[in-house]
Length: 331
Ligand code: ADP
Ligand code: MG
Image 1: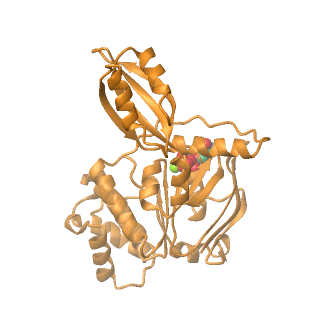
Image 2: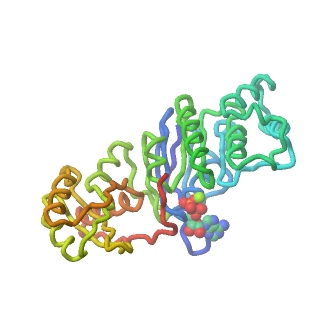
Image 3: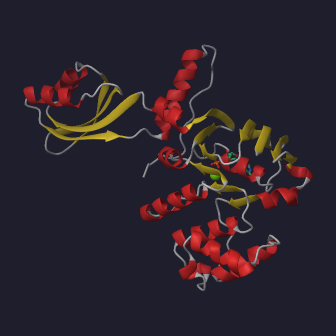
């Protein structure tokens, strides 16, 4: 359905995209995962025809993007990072406007009513967009992407800046849309693409560094388990004792609390449950464990496992690990 061949985008001497190739089949829900500046938005802007590539080709349903830009645009609904909202219009006026812009041939009222009901904005239709919450604005952005019922929908970081409740709702809406449309979503949050997408494409520095079914990638990420522990006792002795427990790969003190307890990060083999042995070891030494929490793998962890496994398999690899633009928080 979407075929991308060797996309390159240069800004001066800088490569924003450095050879992206990808095939996406009908019905797939694909996540573009990568840190800020990786090239996710650039790729999406090129697929949707908003930006031209320095070189490379995009085919939608076998049709070259540039040979029929208008035809191809009717195939794709796009929610850019900054939704293209006219904030002085009411929701209904705006959706009518988009309907005309897309020269939609559906029955106007029925089509817009249906979309409002799917994205749950029927109750704010007559409100001016400026006055809506961020979550509602984002829903209006999704509604404009759905007008014309395009088979492909592309969402660029659709949950950025939303509150946790809105994030959950927008994610479940996108999952639902994925039942009937081919969907591409970008995110810098691993858990987000994990819950929404069947397939994850990891982009870094303008290149694809992994392209795998979600389950398989989760397995790569799941080789280690990480715990945050709070233990009352002298840090050095705690570390010496915990290191001896079968399955523990490393332990590091990350901070001291005022009551003589320390925070530790413990890395353990994913196939060994260290929790009982940890408790017993600490109890025997009278170092009370005040807290233990398993931490989910972050994008950074998964990225490092991929880069590490590449280093293991390609001794000539020279790629340096990227610095992360922002510390990722998984919700
Ligand atoms: P992402 O969406 O993954 O955060 P982008 O696709 O927005 O990344 O950006 C990819 C790279 O291209 C970044 O390094 C960014 O700074 C650069 N870039 C994007 N747009 C421009 C532009 N108009 N001029 C120069 N550099 C740009
Ligand atoms: Mg972006």
